[in-house]
Image 1 (cartoon, rainbow, N blue to C red):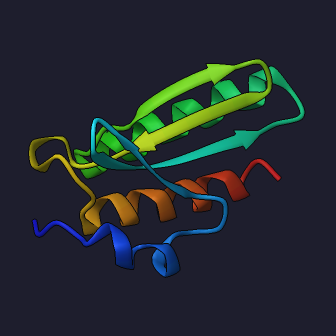
Image 2 (cartoon, helix red, strand yellow; image 1 turned 120 degrees about the horizontal axis):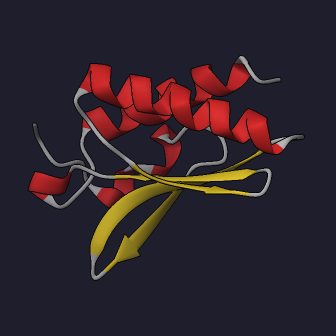
Length: 98
């Protein structure tokens, strides 16, 4: 899969997603908020199912009423279309918790 230019990503990001860098490697990041801790747990479970289906696995941090997600294509050390599709799938999954 082809790497996407980080300079051209901003307009393609789903709402609330940020482009960040760690050791010059770009990744997508978002924090989701929930009314209850267990809602966050269920959301993490939904993301795990999505990740398995896509064979694309994010870093997920579960906190009190918050879930942080970061995603990039590990073997290419950057952002690809797969990362954008995963971020959109996260948005769809979150809508079930509204």
